[in-house]
Image 1 (spheres, rainbow, N blue to C red):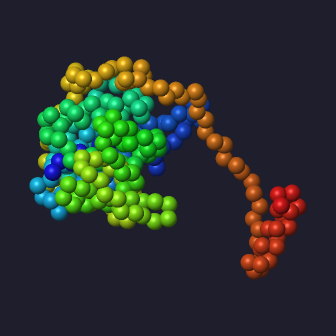
Image 2: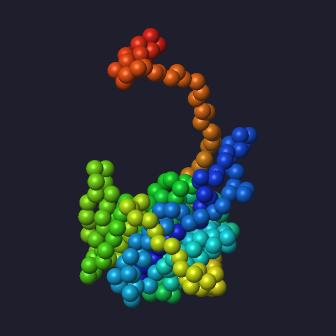
Image 3: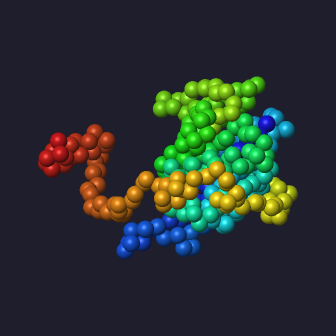
Length: 267
């Protein structure tokens, strides 16, 4: 069985600050990490491999050369092979262009590694939060898809996915090949071992460019292929002030809160 996991290197959002003048992210000095939801997708693939040892896990990322660090993290955890797709022609791609480039790259990687039975993605990247790339890849490749996966198990020619829904979860089955996006499950991803980490540090990670994707239409990549246009950005202003309501009992506090809101004309 072959599983492809699409991953993205993102800035650690717990360390991000906003430039008050330009209203843009300050990336200098901010560490980069594997997108957490993609990490859950890698772990989901690893759990399938635990049950089916003949499974091969391939990871793929689109980005600059530094994104190989994220791929090495995945190799250190569970992946067997890794590929990076990178080209100046891809710069400025929005989600539609990105998903198209990745879908064309998947076709190339399948020619090298064999057809993929499953394609796993994180539900969204924490630096964009659009949740669009995974489903768009499925559309480009004409594959069935299941979103918001928590767990996945292979049963014959089908994958059974525990899917998060508003009031709990449901179990869905899809015929392979298919694509699944993953959200945060009840468990945490496994840690890498020293042996795998050392091997990952020395692993060869091929970089694929536009020249390696003979069927790609560059008018659908980069800024030219990106219909999304950002007209402006701003940082919401933090509201200050407020009043602390205190009483001897909860009932007393509720009466004081009601009086304050009534006096302000709120209720």
